[in-house]
Image (cartoon, rainbow, N blue to C red):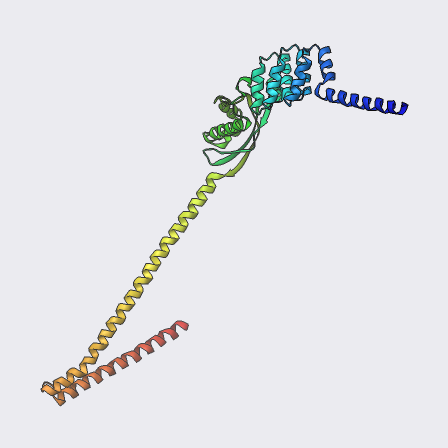
Length: 336
């Protein structure tokens, strides 16, 4: 009997412990007591309701305790709504506390909108209090004299809380500063003017109002480094001269090809004329034969013609030999 009673007591204790653990898992009693002693008015049923809405009560109550201790008037419903929307409640509360300490007018709705927009609202408040320095990459620009100037700038910015939602980021600031540097250097007469007055770049770029439409306010633009690059003008002139040279060579080659074609055409005409001469010479014996048949040419006439031809051939031979002898004599005289 005693054993049966002991078993019953053990079973009851196990059931009580199980029921108590289930109760505490749904009812964060410790968190409710912490909130109560911290001055945060939140009912136990509200915490149980968070459990059913799949909201971790600790991520709502702890930021609420911080806000209450800092003197901020926030409601549990707003914090829970922001949490359900996917926001970082703790970061928003920290940003509100930092803004209050820095005397910056920042409402909860504005901070929540900044957080839901994907920006770090706490960092934005910190940058608003302590300006941030953005360093640009090396910006290459060319002055009017063709010399390349390389510039690296540091842009000091301060976050503009009112324009954080929908405002452009750091990339836009860097791009606009680069555009201003290129414009300023490009309008300079020579690169020496830029080297002598680097502050001219800062003043010109700063006067353009580059921070319009961005989430930042530009406080200053300082030239961190300036250096000389390539002689772009001379390189362009060299490339142009090389291109002109190639064009001239192409035209000369074209004229040469036309001259060769014309020469070949003239040679073809010479061959054609020689062929006509040979053809005409071939007609001579035929004409002589026709003259014999018609009685227009006698035997004596034929022999007289042959004698004239032989005499002419002999004269040509003598003239050729004399020409060779004279040429040999002139050569020997030159050698001596």
